Length: 295
Image (tube, rainbow, N blue to C red; front, side, top):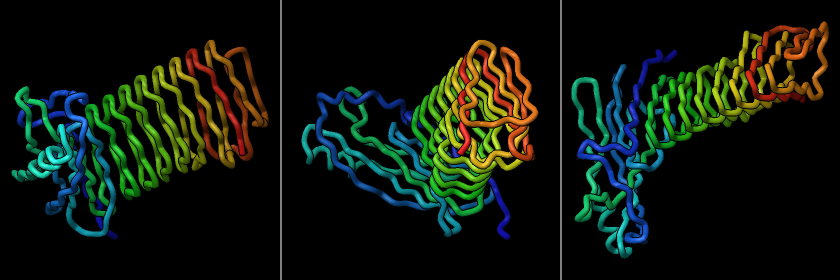
């Protein structure tokens, strides 16, 4: 079995080693031209990969090779198509290696006001069965078909996890977290961003302040917890077998089609057993509502 190592990716979105990118005045530069430039780097255990995305998105995918492959998707901008193509082609992607660190950055043409005339996003392929730590400030992160544990940290960008297998921990400020498909444990906190759990098979321990939590869960029989301050919780449970405790101080609790055995309730909470009660689920909200369904 391949030994899991950690690949650390620090995503410096919207920043530049050579100075901050200024906002592009779209009324001046209406034409676009897209090209792709490819590069690669050797993978070493514990390597740190720093990536500058220049506003565009970052996509992380697995592949079977023992190296890191980088696709730089460059969008040149100009007053004409020819000028946009020239700006895209003049944009250079630099890989700087020092000790156990690789910095991926770009140098793009600028106008007289210092405005960057190209946007750069990346698709990065990392080896299978390696863990990753992803950190972003303003850009979106998409992780597709990755096997291994993920540690996600995003400030204002959105984070999407699709068809992944492994444990995911996260810390998000205002961006949303969308789990399209995950087999593993999900844990972490969000301040104002919503959390969408389209298809999660495993366990949850998540917390949000003002964001909502919505999703479809097939829990593995462990101890699971969802808590919010003002956000609503709307969950569909797949084949549940749980001891449950639901509480909202001022919001309402709607059990939908759930049937509880040995149930107890008061004005603020409901407790009971669904099925054989093999796991435990606690959902707590201060002022938000709690809605539940079972398939």
